[in-house]
Image (cartoon, rainbow, N blue to C red):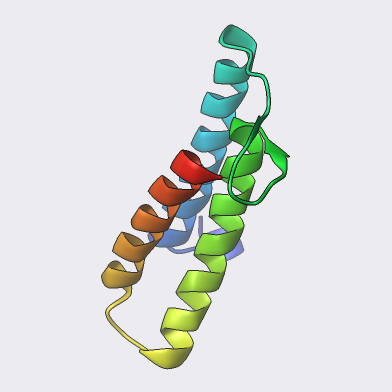
Length: 90
């Protein structure tokens, strides 16, 4: 990984994202889903909710860095709560 100057946390981050995309693709093939309407009043599928979760988590982490500065594992816990809420109610 020296040729890209990546760190291990960066590589793990992208590996987790790739794993999520592969998992959700397999789920979509094996268990097709009809879109559902949640509190946003838009139809969403699992993939849509994953995208909303990833985008929201990015903003949560950026806000945490800007406002708090350190203690990033607490931001991860907040992102997990946010992800559970998105997959439950959106």
